[in-house]
Length: 219
Image 1 (cartoon, rainbow, N blue to C red):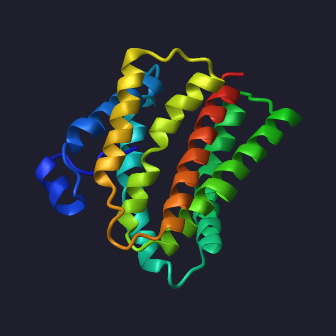
Image 2 (cartoon, rainbow, N blue to C red):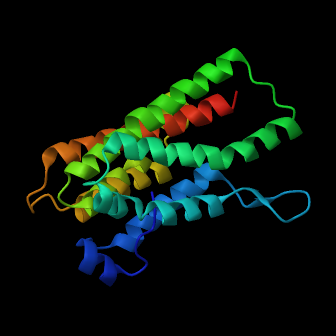
């Protein structure tokens, strides 16, 4: 999920989405609950976990669908997905190696297998589905709106797989998320239904990846 507009008038003008800010902030509240409080390291300089990473990721990811649509005619979805994650992995690998050595983390065969399967679920399935959907879509912003429903699926999977309690706030977030997607999504302007289905499947599998990743990390 991400916050694309802070003003309801802008959301209405550019995405035909009434009451956007109220619905989006409810979803962000749920993200904050899942991520946790703002915490710093022992030197008080680096945040160990919190909403800052979520905000940065959301802002950057908000440009993904429009940018992908611009270059969709020149690069096939599979190649674009491959290069995205290859470049990203090469950039992050040094940090991962340093952390593994510093904390003396020992990876077992089962850990490598889980990471491989999670990588397939996330990159080879979820992201490829989204990229193919964007290529076929007539409206890339609709793909972004549909994919943002992954927060709704995440709550459902958290209850089913993590045995989290379905609290009143979660129910409100679920309802608000569904209503928000339906209000923002415009299915009347010659929408490619195949692209819509692909975007929903991408959001669903991304949510499953998110919950499974958290479940395996806790072990």
